[in-house]
Length: 306
Image (tube, rainbow, N blue to C red; front, side):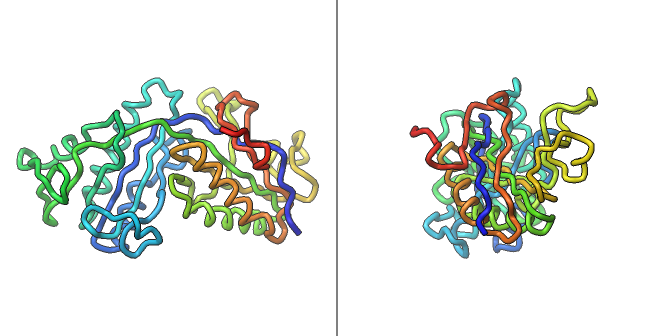
C-alpha cells in the first residue's frame, strides 16, 4: 500500500558552500579521505559546518563522463554553513582549511582540486601549503596551477584557489512508520535514491537522522531540541502530531547547490520510498517560513514555476 504523501513543504534556507574534488590511488584511500573530511559535520547546531559526499566521479564510478585532472578515482565533497551566520565566509574558510589540511593532506595518495569558476574564492592552496615549512612551491601539474607540498609519503598537491558561492540547506523528508523498521527501511530507500543526484549531499549518518529537531529549547544554552510532538514515546505526555498507528519517524536532510537539485532529489526520494511496507506517511519539517524562504513541495504540482 502506498503511503500518504502529506500536502506540505520542506523549508530550505540559504547557505554559503564550497565544493572540491578529492582523488586518490584507489577507492579504498578515496573513501578514507571522504569519511575523514566529512566527519562530525551532520548539523550546524553544534558542528562547524555540514559536510557530505556529492558523488563519485572518474574511473570506477557511475559518472565516468567527469574526467578527473589526474585520471584517478575521485569524489566531490560539499561543505555548507548557513548564510544567516554573520561571519559565514570566515567560518566556511576555516572549516575547509581545517578539514583539508587535517583530513585530505594526511590521507595517503590523496590530492585536492577546486571546482567551478566562482567569482569569490579562498587562497586555500597557499594556506594548506604552509605545512611545507618553506619547502612548498607553486607548480603547474595536470594543466593547472597548484601548490606542491613535500610530505613523508612523497608529495601532496592542491589547487591554489577554492571557490565558494550561495547554496541551500535544510531540504528534508520525514518517514512515518508503523514501527522503527518500516520507518528506517523507507528512509534508507530514499537516501539511496538521493545519492546519484548531482549537486546534493546528505550529512547525517547514512544520510538519515533519527533525532529530528525543532528550533529552540527550554534550556537557554541550547539552540535546538527534540521535536516532542513527533516523539512516539511522548504521545501520552504532549499534544501529539503523530497520525494513529505511527511508532517511529526517520528523516533525511538534503543540502545542495541550488533549488532544482533539491527538488529533483526530493521527488526521487519520495518515489523510491512511498511503497515501503509499513510506511504510513511521508511528510516534511517546516517553520511556516520563519527559517527560510525556499519551499520544496512534496506534491510537485504545488511547486511554483521558477
